[in-house]
Amino acid sequence: MFLWPVFVFLGVIFLMLLPGTIAINQQWQEAIILRFGKFKRLVGPGMFFKWPLVERLLRQDIRIQTLDVMKQEVMTKDNISLMADAVVFMKVTSTPKSLMNIVNVKLSVMQYSQTTMRDVIGNVELDDLLACRDEIAERIKSIVDRETETWGVDIQSVNLQNIELPNDMKRVIARQAEAERERRAVIIKSEGELIAAKNLEAAVREMSAQALYLRTLSSLEDISFDQSNTIVFAMPVTS
Image (cartoon, rainbow, N blue to C red):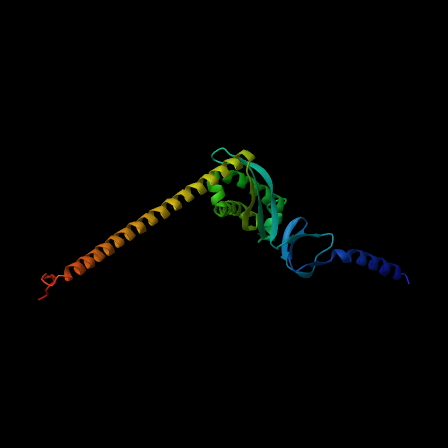
């Protein structure tokens, strides 16, 4: 009889500790177990057990994650100010590194990508930025990927989204594009006139040859009326 309170007490303690003993990771999650604050082991998806009050659980999402790099003002190499933003696709490849080597891995990747984007764009001219966006984005990716390797992160890709130019620069580019279109139109028109002139010259030569042939036939016709005239044709002789 005296053992029942003990059993009830132990049962209550067990029920209280049970939620801290059993844990479940989703298919896209990994977790590290810390025992007395020290890394003990890595666990994957599914159900697992840990010691209550002794071991602590830290989870990490190992799916590809999308980070929006905030729009910021940057200066190109030719001193043109513009607004640019980007999107970064990252994936955690080492859960222990991403949890123990950096405080907030997502925030750190986003801020480092933002700084790298500003530095890379600052070393290129505006024309190169507009013409080679993919190459510049790949350059940003390689720099960020090299730095975040120690954080257990793999940068899948970096895409430059919006590049906004000042209004005065937009007008300059529009005038430049219009001048380029006019230049191409003049070149195409001049090439067409040159071809037409060549065709006309060939036609004149053809017409001159036909006119000479008709004149010859007319002369022969006039000569043939007089039977006393002798007509001699020179023909090439081959041996």
